[in-house]
Amino acid sequence: MRSRISFGLAFAAAAGVLLLLHYPYLRLPYFWDEAGYYIPAALDFYHHGLLIPQNTLPTGHTPLMSIYLGLAWRLLGNSPLATRTAIILLATGTLAALYALGRIVARRETAAWACALLAISPLFFAQSSLAHLDLAAALSTTAAVLLLLRRRLVWFAVLLSLAVMTKETAIVFLPVAWIFAWRIRKELNPSAAAWLVLPLAPLTAWALYYHHATGFWTGNPVYLKYNLYSTLTPGRIAVTFLRRLYQVFIAGFNWLLLAAAVLGYRKAAKAGISSEHSTLLPPGQVQLRKDFFFLAAGLALAYIGMLSVVGGAVLSRYLLPIFPCFYLALMLFVDCLPRPAMRGLAALAAVCFIASWFINPPYPFPYEDNLAYADFIHLHQQAADFLAAQPNNPRIMTAWPATGELAQPELGYVKKPLRVVRLEGFTAQDFHPVSPRSFDLLYLYSRQWNPPDNWLRHFLWVENTLEYVPAMTAGSVERKFHLRLLATFRDRGQWVKIYSR
Image 1: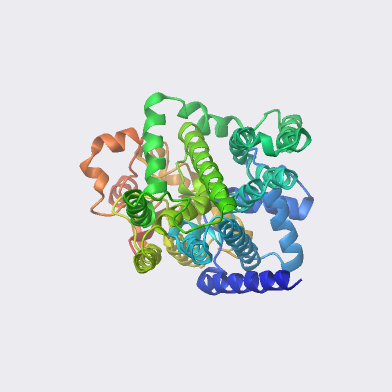
Image 2 (image 1 turned 135 degrees about the vertical axis):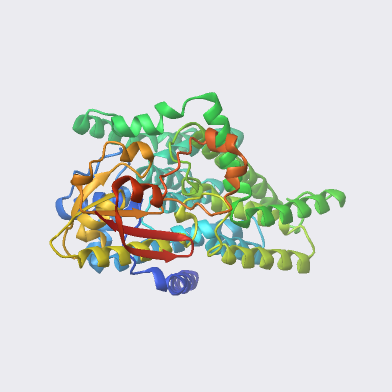
């Protein structure tokens, strides 16, 4: 009973710290894919009980996040504050699962460092209040690893089923679990091992239901072309694989923690001590640590391999399910160093992680990888306020996600819908068929981070491999349509420009 009370207090304290750190961002309107899919899908469940959304293009995603947000809105009210609070509770749960996992394979301090570094890592911190699927999948996947280590296969099957119903790609961990079960088969009875097929059942049921309702096993024609058919080329797979390795091992100062882990490994190797014995663990924990390394490596290989082959957008957040175990594994090696060195390097990594909340890299990256997403939202709030104040209800031409921001008040940018003319993007090809008579105002904005000293400009072959198509410059668009600049908004390298004819 006392341990449950202690856990509850610790969970509440961790949630409080995360809420406090995210306080400036809790009331922000919805961002990018939140506005484009996840919030509209959750609203369809909230208002109409729909598992397959109708007010946005269905993509085949399993529905547990929509259900979770719908229930959260019933309890807390439908608002960005309620949404972001609900997501922060998922982040807190992920940290709790990681700490429990760390306590069975490491010292208390090592587990605490792993949790702290995960919590403040720029990707996890940014995603801790955004209504995407990947953080919830990270929670259930990390808890599933913990239960697999404890040989609780029934509960493992339940947790991985929840992960799959949160995001269908979590099923990629199941073959790793099967291999692990084969390795420890002498400890298992056949009936327990049979539970390892359970996560296939809800995914199969969902696929059948989705096919019955839409005619597709997953997604839609556009979604499948972008995320599957267009990605299956050897060159693209190889480049995406390298990008995935960069996202895991280098981005956001992960390279610093990796370097510390390498130092710890080399010190242990020189001393003739394996990482399993470096902290004088009991024999049972030594085996658990070996099992953990196997599962962490298998989880990482499964996700990196899968996401190198499928997925049109090479977003870092898709890798979130591997990061809790990844940070714990690195800290187990860092823990091989003398205690002062371990603490000093972990603290240095923590400082660099926090700096990465605000420091953008010198090359394009998704705004959602750090607090650049908040800068984007602030700019678009200013633009929406300016456009809403314009007389005569003008026709505003822009590209998604700004189209949704201006047309859907529930996303938090406008109080009533504005008249929107939709563009696919801001490239020369997108503007080619546009008639000057089709709009009154033009709303341009920086759709991606593109700093003046963009390193990719020095490596044109990289840009070509990434299929990067630059947007038309604002000046070129202004001259093409003979426009007049009405307003400009800027924030930390991002910009919005409003033109009139």
